Image (tube, rainbow, N blue to C red):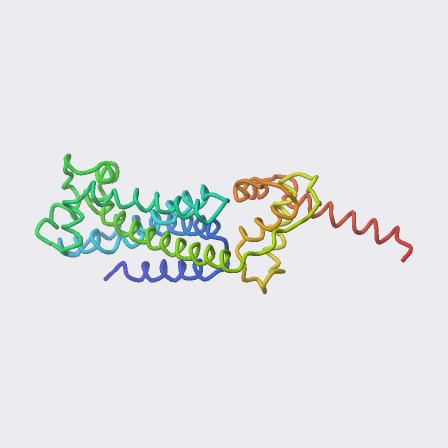
Length: 280
């Protein structure tokens, strides 16, 4: 198929993103950015080259385009869910994820007729659902793309992508729940002694988050195999501080115009001063 080369390049790019040891929010952010680029490329190519037949057009909007669009939906949902993930007990996190699974499954129930059509592999209405210029006012709001961008959308290609994305998100959440249950059981079987420390972080939260990201980036813990949130959680316990949504703080640090590594530079300067002043 004429668009397969671009799809293969897209999948290779995603494989690189997924193989990196980034925290899930960073991975989702990169996935969103990369997928948007390839969707725009694909759109330009479709408008320029079109299709050789009605069947080719149906295959594209039923199978090819949703491969990219579902990834965009997936990463956006993962980013939104994980950025609001509770930072307390495994029990609360499991409840939070189960709530989202229920919400995602509601989409299937709300669009049951098309959901069954797609799941059964039906083709009877493909001419209506997956060719351009066939907008149906009775279809869900997700199909608004068919009105806004009728050169690159049909009335149900977004629905296919949404079903695929929801399947992926639910699978991800179920795996996270399984991990939490294993951790919860391990903590019950082998309770760890609570960290006892009278140290209190008296600089800013932003400074501590900058330091945590630097340590994670340098891979100084567990040979680089550790999630950022685990490091952040440890620092919260040791220094009696709540970091809140540290990822958004990192975005603010990254957006600094003058000096993104201000705190680290100050640390380096203070150490240099001490080394120069030390008699030892």
